[in-house]
Length: 304
Image (cartoon, rainbow, N blue to C red; front, side):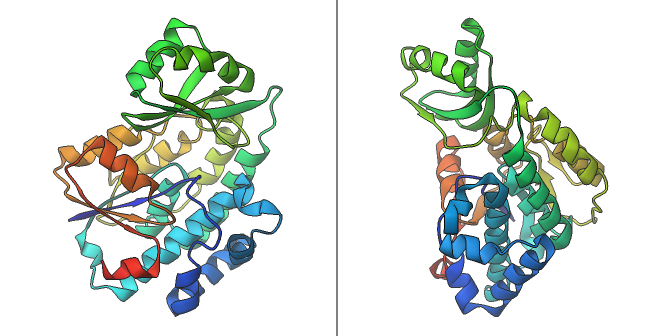
């Protein structure tokens, strides 16, 4: 059996998916469907990046989703891989929505529309203070959390990406104040991220509440593919739990390390990363060496 994983924001690159669009009718049609549903010219943004739109959260999310979905559909169409060999699907942040569309838990139309709104809400979240995020390299989440607690920093762990990479969220002033403390206490690198706000933190609570209403009316379909939730890193095939956890995802930590360890618990061996870049493959390798991992992000990968 195999698990499919899908990347989140930060994996985008100009012209991602273009080779699929130019060479496979199924890819071209999938892009067109998403453009029709979202009323966003996704391919123009991805292939031309006019005005730097690809790096604006409002457009980034729908573009990464579209590319991952296109690659997944092409992979199924051009290889002998069978849907009944899929055990689990999961994604990082927006990638969890990709997993729901690719597993046919939700429709392509619904996913396109809700991700458009999610991107807009996260991009336009206006608060009284400037917020941001930083990646901390060198220590695990428990170590980082202890530094936060010991120094009474008003910061939150947003992404537990691996035992060596943790992303924190908070006010920019608080992030700046914490930098030297982290670097003087074992953190090897402190990298401020180019994002519009403090994602996966309390600063997203208002946007999360607004998106909850849209998630609540999503129609979910039953099938045998299980989903690992970002919110609690547990495996579900009950759509009620999948939907409930999705409603709390935006303002809470992405438990990626725990999610990969959950795959170890069920003795999964094969992981396929679908979408732009190879970020998740790198993170998974840092969490565990017990998986056979391959990444599909260009047409040459289809023959792997």
